[in-house]
Amino acid sequence: MTNNASRFLALFFLVLACGEVLALSTLVPLDTAAYNWIEAHRSCTIMRVLHSEWPLGSLIVLNVLTLLWLGYQRRWTEGTHGVVLIVLGSLLAELLKTVFERARPSTLPPLFIGNSFPSGHTVGALLLAATLGYFLLHQRTAVWKKGVGGGVLLACVAMVIWQRLYLAHHWVSDIVGSVLFASAWFCFAAVPRPGRSLARHFAPACVGFVLVYPLVYYFPSTRVVLPSVMTSARQPVLSFSFGDAPSPAIFRGTWGEQRHEPAGAIMWMDHGEASLKLELPARQAYVMRFAARPSIEHQGDGCFPLEISMNQAPVQRLLLSRGWRQYEVTLDPTLLNIGPNTLTFRTWTNPLPTASPAVAFRHLALFSGARD
Image 1 (spheres, rainbow, N blue to C red):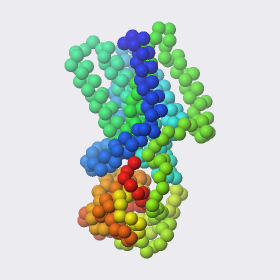
Image 2 (image 1 turned 180 degrees about the horizontal axis):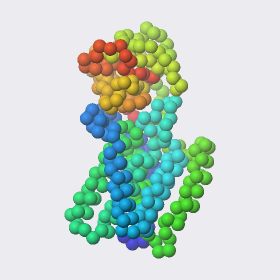
Image 3 (image 1 turned 90 degrees about the vertical axis):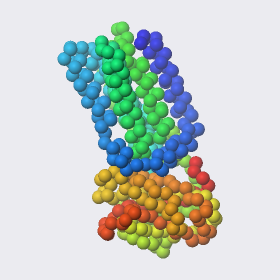
Image 4 (image 1 turned 60 degrees about the vertical axis):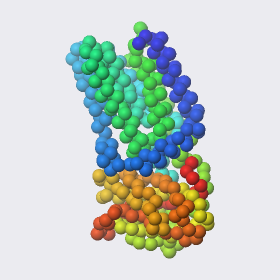
């Protein structure tokens, strides 16, 4: 790839990435649809596999081995160029992630841990794989070996991307933007330019990052807020906190104690069934959002089923993720009554005979109409 071609491709990917950022508000419904589809089709087996970091770890190990091999051959310039490309690209992604303030799918107000755009894991995986692929492409080896190596690299990147989506760490638009930004940076920096060694800019770039990053991090006015499903404004028909419920009479079944955490009040549900009595003003479609997390003792295997029913009719079966998450299900109007309704949560098909806390709930809200 020539310098002119690399510059053209870098500009092309950068324009696409900027266009996606500007169009994010129109992509929110697509993010919602993809997120809800994944939530409805989760598998315990896949979740257990994806909770490991082996796809990204494999790329890191392969890069380390490649660097050792380049060092053994005393190809210091190529090895240094690859390391600087990956490190500077990762720093740029971290800076962009701080500048662009976007709520993750796992964001749980008032908790806010990390921004969603772009995905650091995706950028890192793509840069690692692309750098290895670039080295592989320029080796004197059989074409089929290059094809196999490229396939392995693509598979690792695909696994990292699927992991970020499946475990609800990022939206689909985050992944697309991350791929575009990473591609733009790689095309810009991959081809060495005569008299312009990328390594010469490493120290100034790191100093610039150290100076700029704290300004963006500690001064929110310098950030750009991007639209997200989690921050969309919508007025609930019914809303309450489990730990500060308006009346204890709404609780039925094996509800445990109420507690207060730094982020708010919660209530534990023990193994078995527990219900809520909800008063609904109309028989129509509702979207129910609730925040929950399995206890530490029961989330070790990365898979915890929660069955939801309304008036004894099944609604949906979810697999809860580790830590706090906000979940969303649609309530069919044919299952509802005007006035009192019984919403039931069930943790196991065959409840375990234990009184230890199983699931913690923070808040619940009902919104009229279909999903966004």
